[in-house]
Image (tube, rainbow, N blue to C red; front, top):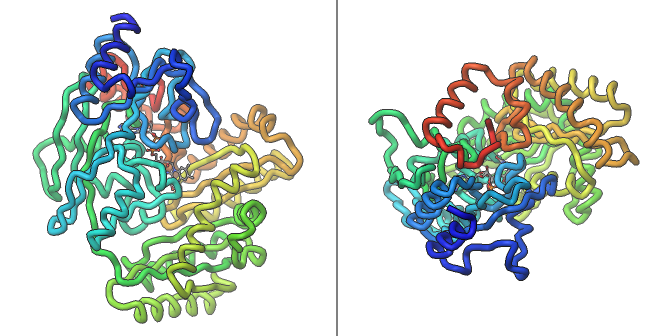
Length: 474
Ligand SMILES: Cc1cc2nc3c(=O)[nH]c(=O)nc-3n(C[C@H](O)[C@H](O)[C@H](O)COP(=O)(O)OP(=O)(O)OC[C@H]3O[C@@H](n4cnc5c(N)ncnc54)[C@H](O)[C@@H]3O)c2cc1C
């Protein structure tokens, strides 16, 4: 099938208005072709915006027949260049944004079934309107979609208690690489009827099929969510505080974030109105959240008891507890503003790594020292979900240096230094952002060879034509 014939078929499937191409001078495709960090700008053959599952299936069948690659895309907030086309001008971007219907909410079964293009924040609000809670939360929640969250197995700030997107998903609807529809929207918590296909598609970054809808778990809303901000004298002290918090709060501990002093100084510099507390006093601050189902007074008493124990232990030097929901939101807003403040400061080398929590202090001590020795004056934007052993260990150039030049000349060397250290300490080079095309060539160095062989066999079995997001992950 010629390109012109393919475009005509696609227009017949989704309608003229929903096939965007460069041939139309009125169409600006930048939002679909450029990644969130603006590190990559590709060129699409077309951006296709189907409105329902049957249309997605027809689009995939047409592309398969024409041998044209498909790049599924949700909110395009991914950080590993996985959801934008390459520069060939031959790939079709399949945007799920029009598929944003909430199909059903079952309060007795505690489930929400919705289309893949629903924005995460909309899904959270749907749960909230029913007095329930969807505990998936990340700074991009105003733009990222449920399909993207599942395709990347997103993490965020509540993994400590509720797990990744994978753990919140009970069922999926998927269009396969051949354009068939797998209707697996089960709301079942138990279903041992063979291979669990859901887990193949979750985290596959669009390389095996297109997620068109999902059934997610909901939870009762806690009656109180209290937030504390604590200054801690070292990363080791932050780990000690985590252990104390787990003992004092048990399953009510729903968030535990660490933020390094330089990361907070960037928020202070670029968003001074946010008024970052305690950051000048200590090398790290911790944000922790206590969600309780009994009473706010009880939750507050337990949080204060924890902080008293931590002050007595010396793992906390000072702390504040938010007095209101508005104050709690402001504290979380500071934490969520770190990636934006970092982007304001200039390009940087990002590492989304995970380690056993017990190894994090030693990893930071070793790697901070090695980086300082290798690149005098280098600055570390170190923050992340410490409760999950997940650090965003990002490297910013020395003051006054050119960040574009820094990336060009130092990225490969710094990545090798950081990832080798991660491997020595028993960690992973991608905790929650995925592999995309950014880490594809790095993966074979750190992934078990048998695991890679099995991954290639799965890709070959499900997408023998290689049309689903080629050049990503593998
Ligand atoms: C400020 C900021 C903060 C962030 N914080 C976090 C965080 O705390 N935790 C975290 O995990 N991530 C975080 N991210 C990364 C990003 O938001 C997540 O990866 C998110 O899950 C991506 O969703 P999306 O809809 O934007 O997907 P996209 O960026 O559009 O796509 C991401 C990948 O999924 C594939 N894909 C998208 N939709 C589908 C579909 N329906 N079917 C099949 N494949 C699909 C794409 O091909 C691509 O490979 C952050 C990003 C930003 C910008």
